[in-house]
Length: 248
Ligand code: NAP
Image (cartoon, rainbow, N blue to C red; front, side, top):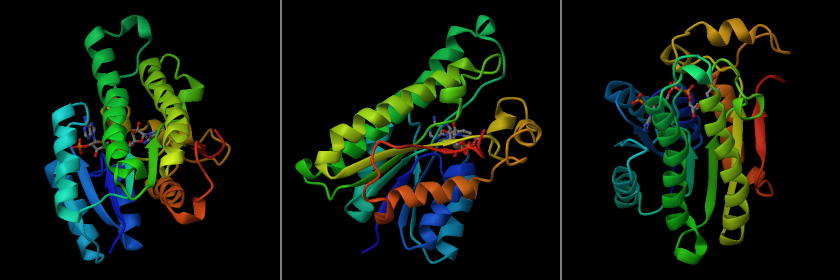
């Protein structure tokens, strides 16, 4: 029986790299996406080409019903869940807070905070040993922004990741006694399409050159940390906020 992980935002970037890394060591993966079906299908095809099992799961993580249906579909296919990688997230155009409208702020917190909480809640309901689950692990994908604050770029995004850090600390204490370890990774500047979605495709490579390691990171370098946190090798790691930021 393979271990089963649900990865939100697995069509592209860090989520996709995590799906491929988990599949390469025998996990079955639920591949969530919201809009980019072709990219999600490509991730699923690559997982299957590597001998793994993949289930495509379309859902906006900010939509409570869709999230619950997504976990139901995973349970129907595999019968159980061992891990959640709470990875889906968005940025928006760089600007000072004074120029942000309420719609932008609402969507930022809907996806990055409400979405992460809803997915963690569904995982808690299904993985906790006191609710009939098998235990397991959750990894929340936060950001170095939560400690840097991202002034003049996106203090909204940074604050949303601060909430993810705090959820990680609380849930680690809440779910640890119930068989579920909860940790976070905090990536720094990683080469993915998220920077283009904020209007600055060159952001990671330009700012990455100024970091202690002199470059941006790659999605598979973040995936490696996520895989380790999910694995039994990290069996005594709970409530950790692991920076994967090249020392930035
Ligand atoms: P990305 O390349 O832009 O990919 C984002 C993924 O999230 C896509 O699979 C996208 O699905 C999905 N997604 C977006 N909104 C969603 C929603 N409402 N519901 C479900 N899925 C949704 O981003 P990334 O760089 O890999 O980022 C992944 C995570 O790492 C995010 O939480 C981000 O904040 C965090 N992070 C990234 C960096 C970095 O430098 N890249 C640094 C720190 C933290 P579609 O393909 O369907 O749009």
